[in-house]
Amino acid sequence: MKNKVGWILSIFLAAILGFWIWSQRPGLPVDLVLPSHPLVFARLAHTQEHIDQVINSDFGKNIAAIDVPDVLSRNNFSSKDIRHFQRWQKDLLEVWGNPLIKRFLAKEAGIAVYRQNNSYQVFVVLRLTFSTRIAEALAQLSHHWGDDVTIKQQKYHRRVINHILFKKQRVGLGYVRIRDLVIIAPEPLGHLEEVVDVYQHKHDPLQADPSFNFVQRNAYPSGDGLAFVDPDLFSVPGLQMAAFPVLGVSYMPGVVSKYKMMVGLDEKYMPLGMRKTFACPALSNDSLKFIPDSAIFYDWGICYDLEQSWGLARQKLAEYPALAQGIDKFKSRLEKHFNINIRQDILPVIGQEIGGYLTDVDMQGTYPFPRLLVFVKIQDRVKAGRLLEKLTQNPATTLHSEEYDHVAIHYVSLPLGANMDPGYAFLGDYFLAATSRQLLKKSIDAYNDSMHSIVSDDAIEQFSLAGGEKFHSMALMKTSELSRRAQDFLGWMDKYLSGQVSMAAAYKQDGDNKKHELDEAIADKSAELVLARKKLTELKNTSLVNAAVQDPDLVNGAIDNLSREEQSIRDDIANYTQQKQDLSRLLDNYATGAQSAKLTMYNMENLVSPVLKGLESIDAQAVTVRFGDKILETEFLVK
Image 1 (spheres, rainbow, N blue to C red):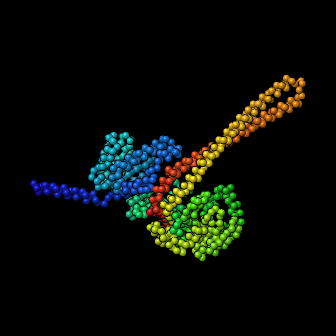
Image 2 (image 1 turned 45 degrees about the vertical axis):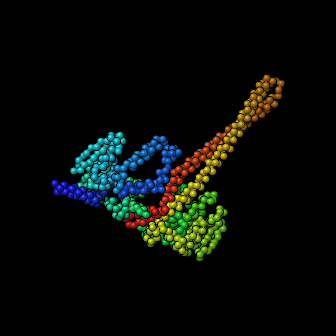
């Protein structure tokens, strides 16, 4: 008996161990159960974890704190739209709060959309955890929606397809389980028989789709997210989308989160100008050497063919003769004034590398003043110097010169406050122009000492921007600093708009007083008009009675004088009435402007400001672009 019990326990334990080992085998790839050629496909691993991170981040908390219904109401959305939003918000929170939903999203989730004749098919794929694989947990989901649910089973090629109907919500869905995957299709937008056929090798799987393979081949090898879109979904006027056969995205989390957007290129469908642009070789970025570490935004790019752009602009302008004629006249006057030819003297001097940076926005003056520097690589330094001599022969104001660390700086002083002295300088092969000569000095310092350069910033190293890699363009944003500057700008805007509201209130008070004065003047003139009419009537009646004894000329003269007086009073009343109407329209415009200013202030405080405060949690972001023979890659890096 004991041996029999021991055998039973051993078999039971072996069965449990075997089931556990079976459950731990590699998961079934999503691309082996979904059909090929979707319009949209997206897959994300650790879905619940990523969503929770966003919700619990400072950014998510600030966004969640926005009273969206109140914002919609203040911005004149209909009560119907607001109710729909609140209902959608409530349903979303209920779904996300469901513990079963979180269990299903714990490992991996995906979605695929297919075009089927004049409609669409939608499949949602969820990878089950060990606990959800023990039982058909999806059927248990119905208990969380109430008892008004029916479940029907359909057998198809040894697979069970379950159809669930939520009568109260009037929603139906089907699902089929294949190994550790559950494939769900909203009904009637999906036919799960196709999924079963794909798994049993009766139809081509997603794994055989060229677009999917292109995106997966170029995606991050250990990324958590992958998506691609059929470009036929988009329509860009004047552009053949066949030139971009694939659009894909890859995501990899980490201390630096990475997002890569991949665009397939097919030059057969590209216009000549676009082919020339995509033939431009990538370069290592030398301009980082003179970007100061105080820069909070920086942008750099190459492949700017200004001569080609000039030609394209001329072609576009030819479609608008009047505008083209006006621009040609202005260009001719400009060239005559400076004794230059733009096409022959300027375009050949400027290279294909252009960029700039921002260090601050000065809020102390009457208006915000950016601390901004732009640069361009010069192809011929000597010709560029001669060109600038021509352009500065007759400056609008006095041009000053200063030598700083063996570099000549030329600038003008503006009567707008401190550091309002825009200027330019040559640094190596680059021409630099800045809103303040202090920025030129900062760039010179950075160029001569890398410790003052942005290359010493940790973000540059973590984003791998200064390691000699070649790019076509690059941008860096110190997001937290930019957010704080933007909030300072909102503060300035708030003061400015508050001034507009106060001014409108003062104008209203003055206007109301003026309208009262006009009302009194109209009343006085109306009384005078009544008296004038009475006198005129009496004079006419008297002249008729005493016509034989009165001088007709005197009587007629008196009548004419009273008639002119009456007309003058009428003109005064009409003038005062017109003034009152004009004043009312002006006050209405002030009131409308004040109301608009108040709404803008409300939106800044209750919508824009929370977003900016949330962005303070992001230290820095970067964007890089590279393209080759068959692909355009844009990488977004977030720290």
